Amino acid sequence: MPNYQQKIINLALDIIFPKICLGCGKFTGKNDFNYVCGKCFGEIALKNILECIGCNRPTRFGLTCAFCAKKNKTDQLIIVAKLSDPLVDKMLKTYKYKFVQDMAAPLSVIAKKRVKKLLSKGFNLFEDNPLIIPVPLRRNRLNWRGFNQAELLAKNISDAYHMIYRDDILTRITDPKHQADIKAKEDRVNNIKNNFAVKNSEPVKSRTVILVDDICTTGATLNECAKVLKESGAKRIIGFVIARK
Ligand SMILES: [Zn+2]
Ligand SMILES: [Zn+2]
Image (cartoon, rainbow, N blue to C red):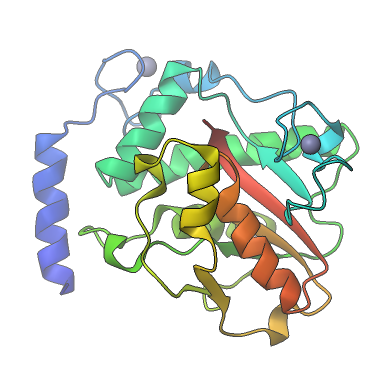
C-alpha cells in the first residue's frame, strides 16, 4: 500500500479511535502513551512467576522442564504481563485486531520492565549476545495498516538493548487456519506443524535466538519456529511474549 494511503487510513483511525486511555477512559495527555495514561500504565500487572511452555507449571526463569523438553523445542519462555489484567488484554486486542500501531510503545516499555526484573533476579537475557527475531505472520494477515505486531515489538526491544534484529530468517510456508479459531491443543499443534521454514540459516548457527510474539497459547507456534531454527543450527531458543492465554 502506498505510503500516503496508509497515512490517510491512520488519520481516519485516529478519529474513529480517539486517544483515550484503555484503562480509565480519560483522554490521554502529553506525558501519557496515546492510549494508556501514566497512572494505569504504572499499575499494569507484570507476570512474576514464569512457567514451562509445555505443562504451564512454574519453573525458574520460565525454563522448559525436563519432562517437556523432548516435545517442546523452545528452551525457555519469558512472559511479560498477566492477561488476567484487563488493561493488558485490551492493549493486546487493540494492537492485534484494531491495528493500533501506537500500542507498540507501552507494550515495549512493559517488556523492558520485565527484562529488568529478570536481570535483578539473576537472569541476563542478553548474556549470549542473542539474535532477536519476530514470529512471522500468516501471509494473508499482514494487516491493512501494514505492520506485523510481533515485528514491531521485536524491533523496539532490540533497539532498546542494541541487539541484532533480523526479520529475514523465518518464513511461513503455508497459511493454516488462524490458531485463535482452534480450541483443542492437539489440533493447534497439528494445524501449525511444518508451517515455518528458515530461509537464511547462517546468522542462527550456534546462536541463542529470542523469538518474539505478542501472545502465546499452547506454545505450538513458538515450538514450530524453534524446531526449524534448531534444525538450522540454533543453539537455544527463548520465547518472549507479552502474555499467555
Ligand atoms: Zn488511565
Ligand atoms: Zn513442563
